[in-house]
Image (cartoon, rainbow, N blue to C red; front, side, top):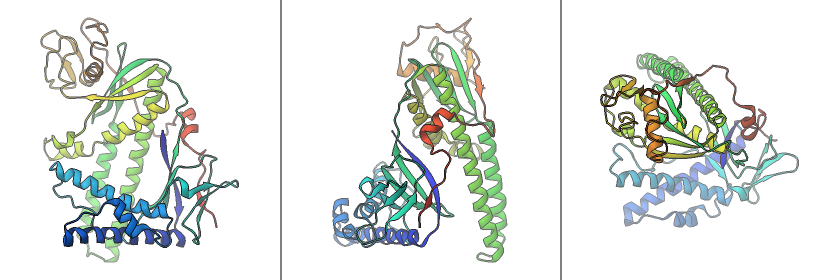
Length: 410
């Protein structure tokens, strides 16, 4: 498994020059690609562009130059895929020229020296980028880009999944907006991850941006006060985004640890792909659902569960919260609890959905009613967020570099 770690580098003249050269190369590839399309009706392939414009590009390593063309054609491929599916309304292909662009180094262009300095080659005759590296683990891929305030290094390296699962129990996970995840553990236990803190941060984010935008609109564009308010808006938005990211990391780490303690071997997560295209509940509810961070939550839970030896699978979540797990009768609940009118089964709606997600992936996994007492499902226990909650030190040693920083050398 590969993980990515980020380090702040500040701003240097060398990084400015490299980013400018990468931006010039992006602009060249984009410009000539669309000229071929307009004048000859011919779409250049990635290999043709790399051969024509990336070979021998001054100031960049050959593979760094090829990576710029890779980025352009990856964006073009994504746009063409959405165009073919009819889902590209309002989206434009990558055609704009860029003044600066991220610089990427693949494995042959990176080398960790014996003195602990990471050397990033920029081609023969050019000064390499030297970074004081706080680990003895050499990255497989390195990227340096602008994060809005300074340059940021993103290092991708391989991590051993050397922690074996403690058991073979299976769990189903139902993702939600109010409760971020409700987990049904094989055997009858239900666990709920509360999302109140995340909803509070989202409301704060929306309220702050709304107030600052209204003030910005009343000022003359380009004035000193207008610039101050724009900087304040960007600063506040970035702060809240960092708080949201910190919250998601902490709750997913704690949930992965809880599942590991429950001797979990397989995690089945409900598939919510395309859900935003099907929603229409009014302006306020649509805003909440479109800001729902289910994909990021699922991604974090996925790799953290795999690091602990668990297998992560997906299953359709269609009608899982409306189907009785005992008699399979479909009934849409009006509140947070499911009350089957046919067999009098009762249970939390999200816990019912989590159990049905597990049964969809593994039908007949548990006999009918094997975990029910008097036709009622146990209420889920909560996994809550605490502001200064720490991650598991055992997992931290595998994914962090001991809290040390990273800085350019020289």
